[in-house]
Image (cartoon, rainbow over all chains, first blue to last red; front, side, top):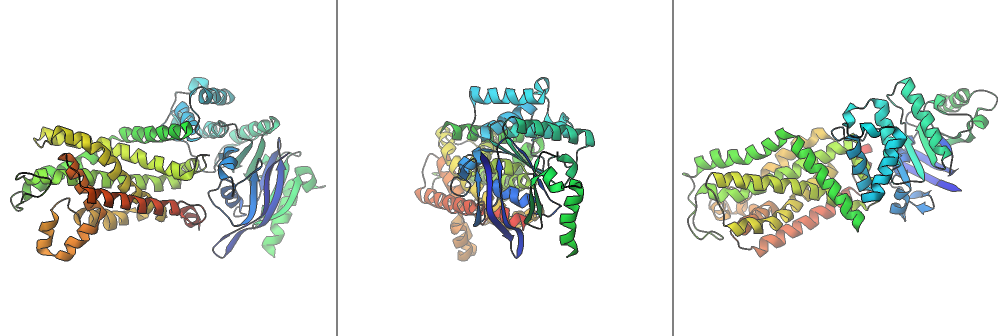
Length: 240
Length: 264
């Protein structure tokens, strides 16, 4: 079942075309990497999918809700982890989760149930009353991921979530999010790091605002490695 | 509907908590008007003669005259402070968290506004309590009537802050706001001198003051504190709020506003 569909999306900052006729469709229960070098247009695409930006060219549909005509339905189906850290470090873990639940309009028992589930997923129940500042970078990121799932979204968007983390945390988070996809969630993960992608993952390669390839990592890699295929796709354009 | 109120409560509580934690901000917010009251007013009371103008029914000292203006100043600074924290939030990303909520954007911005208003009202009442300790008291019911008025004036000044925050790209530009918004608004108003006094030196200045929505916010506060009502000021404040709010909604509209500019 298609959970996220991007169709003919074009976006310009003034004269600069950040996205050019971008189209792809993704199914539920998949881990999909949006792979592209810096400046490929990944963050712009994320802003469009979360309605921080709007474009007149093309449509984006999330779980059947068109983001232009039904933004609230679409946003309700999305959980987002931004590249920048968005925790309030002066609030406790629990307060951060409660605040987010309230922003989504959740309160009382329903909110508490989801918050408990999030804490369990993080294995952080006993640290719930600690200030977010006390957590290390990896834990903060995991907490943001758990927070993004509090309102039971169908699609989880992550914009380069492992930036600035050490290798161990990076691997732990990558594995954790792969597990999430197995529960039926569509995970859409922007990155420029090939080693975060498994062979069976879906990959959309974005470069200079255009989709260069879409398919499983194995099929894009062909006989070589995904790294080589990715370098070849992005290097050719830079040379041209 | 419950979802809306849940979000409102959370946003207001968070802002209040943040304010209480920042003790220096709390202190600065109180010291500023007190300095005006104790130092400035004491120096000026001899220089300025005030005649009896509504809502006052008797001769008043200068300290008594400027108290409503200082209440307005607290809210003016607070509105700008909230706008500053909005720009900061935007650079830090927590604004994105707010704007990607499933609730409508106008409501989320209104919640932000109400959070700032709640904090400013807290400050005004603490300031009035200290003024009372200095012997500057108002009729008891005045303090009660003041409450709804402060919500309105706070919303108007907060909406101005919101509008400004939607046009500022970076935190660094904020000093300009101090020079070009706060100071002119405060000095070109009836906060420190009544309009007729202004007219003695220049009718043009008087007209500018009469146009300044901050003047009307101050007058609305002044009248409320003396248990009376100024319809003209109310109308002016409501109009200004509507204009500022509409402007900020356009500024925060993803199709044309700040996000686009901020990234461009």
